[in-house]
Length: 121
Image 1: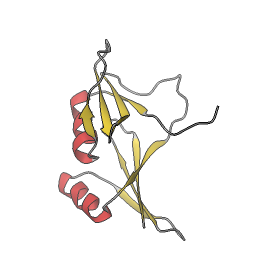
Image 2: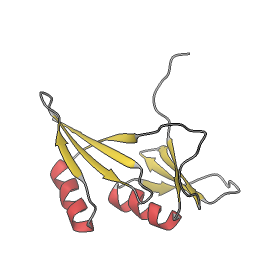
Image 3: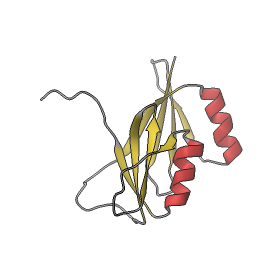
């Protein structure tokens, strides 16, 4: 069974509205269609793929999912992203990768999930 790519990441969030603002306005993902599951949530799209699934009204992690550290996205426009994060007051850390043409930004979503943004070139 060869893997073809990452499908999505699911995040448990205490405040669904606050997380919608983060994933939509801070990261720029599109809030889109989601099946009528019996629990509150949202799906955020990158192009035509729902890459982030939110479960609303959930606090803390799950004992069944183990040690999850972060999720990373490839991104464009480092200067514009830095300006937007500053304007929105979103704390972040910039880390240039030694010996590689890659800048990384690290920030946390409202529930503490570590987000990595990779800017190549």
